[in-house]
Structures are given as structure tokens and as C-alpha cells.
Length: 117
Length: 112
Figure 1 (cartoon, rainbow over the protein chains, first blue to last red):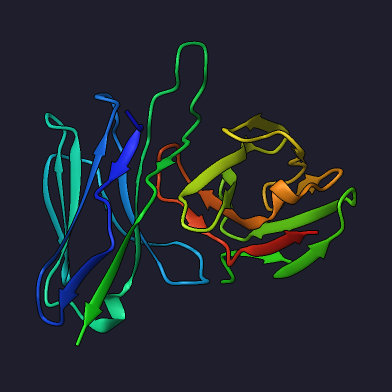
Figure 2: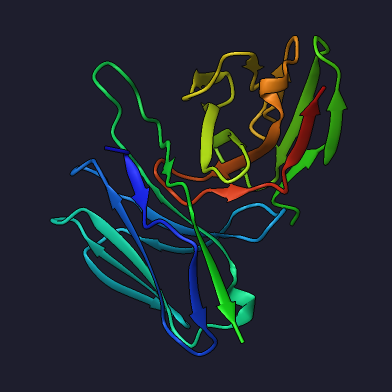
């Protein structure tokens, strides 16, 4: 099992629809969860962080965290063509025995989202 | 406020050459990271630092070295470049452990 796994894409939604991106993680002790957006040829841009169970809303974006089920999701309401990008989930994963973490994040492989007019 | 800056933006190396990728942040962050991203893949951690003078290996450290003499700078050294090191390299920084990481614009490296 991968430490951080995202739903395979690509995901295509019509303009105005809700895009749903999912991420599961392996470590029950994880505390920090992030969603990054990455446009082609650009660097990852932080769009959401969530640390507690439940929902966190920021504009058209909602992050949902369920630690018991070990998943975190990102909903994008009223999707726009400008939302077309790769979305990366990042989680702090505890190190294997004998290792240290020092704030390292583990990234999923990304989900490509295309919003078509 | 520039955030995280990286130089160069692009570079082509011949096999066996060496180079240093520069990374500077002006946010006074203690934590700094180097990642590589291969086409269609996620980010793999190369090295990280929790403060000046303290560095440690990530998932894929072979063929790379780092140093951290100041809070602001975290250069990545490639020795004896190999085609497998062709990738996009990102530097990131964070103010706290397990906190939000902010990325630089990246360096696209090709080794031929």
C-alpha cells in the first residue's frame, strides 16, 4: 500500500460542476494534511490545509478530513476552466522504525483535473 | 517579499559534470526541503534541513549533497551528473514542523 494515494485520474468535469478529489493515507498518527494545485510547468501552490476532523471551507474549496477512515478530500464547487491543473495531496507520515520525520511531508502522485466549458 | 527563489531556471549538463542548484528564502523559515519531480509523478524528497547546520537525507539522496550554513540558503549539489538526474527540482520552506510548505519556482535540469 502506498503511503499517500490519490484517486486515479484524469478527472474531467463540466464548468459549474463540483469536482471531488480524494486521498487516502497509511499512517493513523498523521496530523497535517494539505492540498496543492500545480499548473503545467509551474511549482506546487498551497490551496488548503486541514488539521482536524471535519470540513474546512475557503471560497469555492472545501477540504474534508476523516482520520478514522484515513482519508482527506477536496471539493471544488462551481468549477472553472482555470481550475484545470494537477492536484497534489500531502500528509505527514511517521517514519519507519529508527527513522526521523522532522516535518517531512509525503506527496501523492497527483490527480489531473480538467474542467471543460 | 520574494518568498522562495531558485536559480537557475533551466540547465543542461553533460554526463559526469557537477553543479549547484541555489535556493534562498526570505521568510526566516527554519525548515527547508529539496524535492525532485519526474514527469507525471509526485514529489520525491531528496534532502531536508531543520535549521542552519542540520541536514538529513530524504527518500532519494544518492548522487546529491546539501549544506545549510545560513537560515536563508539551502544549496543542492549534484556530483557526477547522470541521465537519471534529469528532472525538475523544487526547493520548499516551512516555518514549523509539519507545517505548510511554500515552494520555489523550480529548476528544470537535463543531463545528456
